[in-house]
Image 1 (spheres, rainbow, N blue to C red):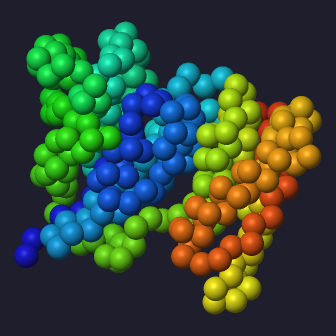
Image 2 (cartoon, rainbow, N blue to C red):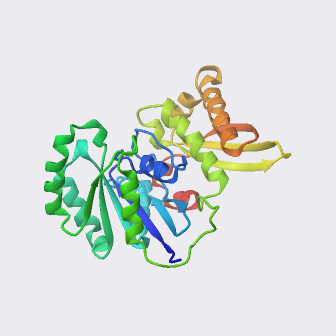
Amino acid sequence: MIKKSGFAAIFGKPNAGKSTLLNHLLKYNLSVVNRKVQTTRNKILGILTEENYQIVFIDTPGELEPKYELQNFMLSEIKSSLDEADVVIQITDILNINFEELRKTEDRFGELLKNKKRIIALNKIDLINKDKILPVIEKLSGLYINSDIIPVSALKNENTGELLNLIVKYLPEGDFFYDKDELTDKPEKFFVSEIIREKILRFYHEEIPYSVMVNITEFKERSEILTYINADIVVERETQKIIIIGKKGEGLKRIGEKARMDIENFLNKKVYLDLFVKVRKDWRNDKKFIRENYG
């Protein structure tokens, strides 16, 4: 039996549906999904293994014009992912197509993409009249001459099977990179930190979600049924710390309660979760700090 295996990078603008698509293709909620931009900060590998193929998906941060060091790091994550990929899935929101922005993307990443098999996944077709899809595809065909264009709905799972078949078609032949039972390259504590951060993204608005990082300082199994987790919620200003903690600690308590329930479901065991809020001034522009915690 011929085996195929390779790396497939998923990239596009913030909120285009990259993480939602990855989760559906894997049939597992690997990546944080939230309507706020900058939800994904690191590249995350998601591994799909079937009898005759293995796809190592790379979920990338949303493409942004960098304004501070954290966003420069996120841009470098996109570039390294595209460089590693055998197949690139460029996900585009059909409701928010901006051809000027798409051309800027070509200017920025075109050199990395010129020798790649590229699939344009035209997402969110469940939110548009079907008779409007074909004209959009025809217009995109002029920009992406050598690429496949496939309309999908990551949320409703429309045409995702066809997309998967197309990815497999372009995979090179070769042995699998990972054991068949592996789902990702990230350790458990990475996903625990992402669960906590997702609660902050959900509960807070304005600048706070983008100024927060979560650092797991202790992750210890106390017994077969109990894991102790200590996590620092790092913010940039004292005012942000006050807002997250909330009146009489109610804000932090709410984050902890909701996060603990999801972490217990993820680890399939009881969890004791300790959360602390700490201030590190202007950490998003601290290159050394970012590399230590995200690199």
